[in-house]
Length: 178
Image (cartoon, rainbow, N blue to C red):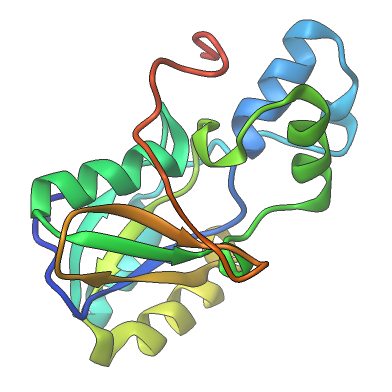
């Protein structure tokens, strides 16, 4: 399984709520106190991956650690030579993480994750894979967040109906978190 096998028509799934690891560690390190509500998502993903691979139809996968899902999506797009469009309203993020990021001026899309995976799947199997993921403890908050199209780059359809490019992060917004 590579990170370069997406094709137009494929669907993007994220295994759960984003940015929890990075914000939890930043909070602990800097003494912000968010860690009482926000826990690191660190977890081994081999069992979750085995579960979804048995469904068939998974064509690409990426671990969204450094640079978060913004970096993972851009790497998938670049290596597969496709465009990825994601829908802001579908990206799983807790209210606590969203609030912490707003307060600190951070983009949750660029915050590292340690127990999440971004997968590209064939459209025909997307709901089956999502259901299998949601039945697994590490995928209970999984969502279909976007689709693959012809073209290049990563774009987001915003909740207000706009469209913005999601650039590849320049450096880490949170210096070396682990």
